[in-house]
Amino acid sequence: MKKNNVFILVSIFFSFCISLSAQPVAESPDVPYKSIGKLKTRTTHEISGSNWSVGGETMDRDYTDYSAWSPYLEALGIKKVRLQGGWAKCEKVKGVYEWAWLDEVIYDLPKKGIEPWVCLSYGNPLYGKGDVVLGSSIDTDEETRTAWLNWVSAFVSRYKDVVDEWEIWNEPNGHNPPEVYAELLMQTAELIKEIQPESKIIGFALAGLPIDWTEDVLELLQENNKTDLVDYLCYHPYNFNPDDSYTTVEELREVMKAYAPNMQLLQGENGAPSEWRNTKALKQYEWTELTQAKWALRRMLGDLGRDIPSSIFSIIDLKYPDEMNRKGLLYANDDKSVGHAKQAYYAVQNLATLFDDQLKRITDFEAKSNTQHEFSAFAFVKKIRTWWHFGCTPTGRQTTMPHRLLI
Picture (cartoon, helix red, strand yellow):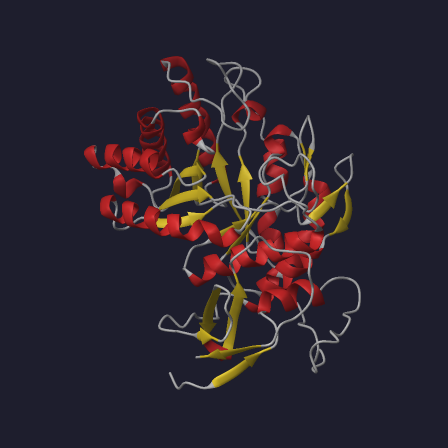
């Protein structure tokens, strides 16, 4: 690539984050340039595909209401939605399955130009311990496992014409030994492949980046000649600074490839709050809607630059029994209706418009800058560059800093 000096007024994620809010953009007095316009965003029907999913989780526990947030999906431009299947919500009487709540969602999403993928997860109070919360333990008794596999079989058979990506359990490393999860993963994946041979299996769905636990599961898969059952190793890397995760992510990739060369990484759930409250992960920071938007774009562009499919958590704030988890792109009222679209919604909307599957990354791109800060830089065809400082958690400052970037 020909080298030339390029002045970067502001990184792409900053311009998305600030200029696509509902309010007009104020020109910075520190920089002698003016905004030249805004992106014309595209809907899901105008985008063929992309790297992105958005989280539609927790309907299995009634923490969100699909009818409230679904009208915002097409304009967002994200082509996939992650759902949670909810065994306990489907089977309230032994052997009887209630599908209406899932039919409403799974059959509606393709009409909106969106592909659902489903996490099959959590227990059922009708069997064993029946944990139905984050960090649930996996029951291993014969009756529960048989009932689980029966539900999975019925679920996949019902929706196989719409869903072809299936995730097995959510964050199992919290309270389960590797051998317990490995057994569930192998049994469930084999069953799904029997019903839908061309399906994709998403495994692990790790809370954080537990290298040793993951390697133990991979070793068990290898010992049983089952590594090819799993297409994606999924992880959830919650960090105050989204860029802090990537050193360990690369270590995870190396471990995965040592056991399963064909397996790919998938970032399946990640987001930051828009308020400083008890919002589960990442709560001890003075978050605002602006810092949430910056965080989301740094995570999504960082994943894109490393060829990792990426899901932003979540479409709307989640009303847990004890608190409101403010990680949504949409602000939820106490009744789970939408209060307003946050800055992060508009930021992600513009990212989805620009970074679709037609925009190819330049893999041999290298860059140097006159800044003393650590930075990330990636390049794409059509002379699009992404660049940002990654040495700290996103701040609420909106000032711009001119830099010289040598590429």
